[in-house]
Length: 260
View: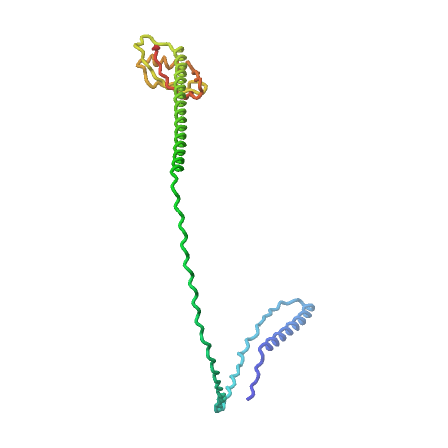
């Protein structure tokens, strides 16, 4: 059976396009010549698309060839491989053991002789005279140290007592100086009964200038209290102590109008 080969669709499209181009070229030349001879005319040119081609013919597939069964292959008989013959075992005769020599018994070692005990050292004898001398020396040293300490304590106490007495005298002198200056600046009010005492707290600078005066205990006479306060302010700056260590920023001044 001979099958016809179908035509390729591309060739038909190319042939139709070639014919159409030639027709358009011939028409253009023809009408171009006529246009020169006569008046131009209007032409309607319709362009047509190529007609659709019929469906391609698809030949049926060729029949499948018959598959012949393969011939059966007969299995070859297995060849039995005989094992190699065993080598004959060689029996080795054991040599006869030589008799061992008799063991010699070890000789007993000689026992060491016991050591003789060393003589014990004699205990030291107590020397009473040396011990007594040592104790006596220690007692004398302790007594000297105690005496020295007592002397130092007595000296310190005496020095502190002297310092306290000196400070007391210095403080009293300092207070008398301040009181004397205030007494020189006071103007006592009339009709004072008795000798009342007033206490003032005074704040001062290191230079003695008075910063503030505050009544701590009244004398019972308001006019006298006011007179004492004015006298303290008028006495600024207050006198300084002979010993600078006795200076105090805060003073408590006790004042009576009449000396006792």
